[in-house]
Length: 449
Ligand code: 5AD
Ligand code: SF4
Image 1 (cartoon, helix red, strand yellow):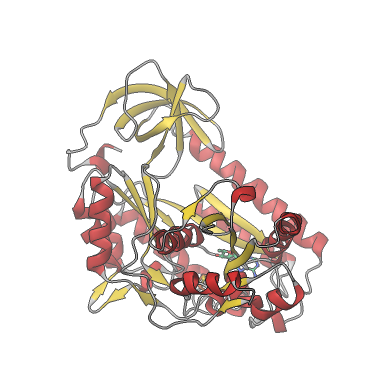
Image 2 (cartoon, protein in one colour):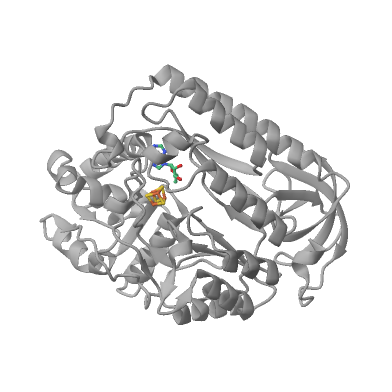
């Protein structure tokens, strides 16, 4: 009997979602098929995340579930991919008897070979990091849809002291501009309407003399009705050239995810973030001048080693000053191997939680206020389909990534652009009425927005 059914679960960031598509691209070309039912699978893969302790705990929990499955199906191959595979390597196979396969982010090409090793009863292990692997020539397996991710740069050279990514994903390396542009052409032909360019630090992208601004401009040119997003940016490398490129190209979204991590210069220095709050705020001011209507989101860590109440208040101050559209907010979690791991994790759990809650409460209030200010305005919305909550409503997104819901009292197509007048807003969602269709060939899409 041929063993060829793969079941895969993906955890963590968008990079992992994009990697899963690469993994499936590799496996499909070797005759494997995807199944949505783990009970039906010959190979179960978990594409994992190590960024915080609780991400790893969740995956150990899932492994417990597959232990039962393997008891009833002893030939099942269970594999760990991604950051946990890289970080925990042999530990996973030695301490976890059900794991047959451990493959890190740079060894996915070897998966078919390593799965065979596991089928033959040995452990399939591939955890070498590469300075060159970008999977440039692999066609990712993507279901049809409107939205796609493309990893344009892998790894990270920043070494923020709290972060395990430079150890699990290795050094920075960029895909070629030509292959990325070709991939976008294919996506456009297939009817995709939005592409997000991904990297731990996209601003470091470099293909010979072409930098990230050049890449963005080239991607935007492919199809003016296709929105281009990108994430994540590092405040140290966000160049003026990039800001002008966003401003000049109507289909590059006016939305920048720019993690600040902390509002205290002292903590930023301990984190090796390489900027001060002054520098950061000046950068935002400049971006707002160059790109009218630009919005920002951020990442915040609360309770980094030695963080005092005063440091915490400075973080709250930055949130008030910047007024981000949204934020991803985390409690500090010590990661073995990082520089911060050697510092004492001296902010106790209760204080971390309390500070995090204050940060979340403030940010929710700010997001709510920002959305209230949009009542009465007309927003350009890419229609994504019916609302998840009711088939009587359409759902879509603005250029600044806000969800907009409006009644299905008109005929509009998925993937088309419409103007919606906002009449109600919560902290997370805008509600409105259809006004008109938007001609996507109009070069001034962003100006209408
Ligand atoms: N603890 C808590 N949050 C972390 N992040 C990265 N490492 C840690 C850690 N050890 C957060 C940062 C980063 C985001 C992806 O995850 O805010 O920007
Ligand atoms: Fe981690 Fe810092 Fe690199 Fe982001 S920039 S992946 S936080 S080391």
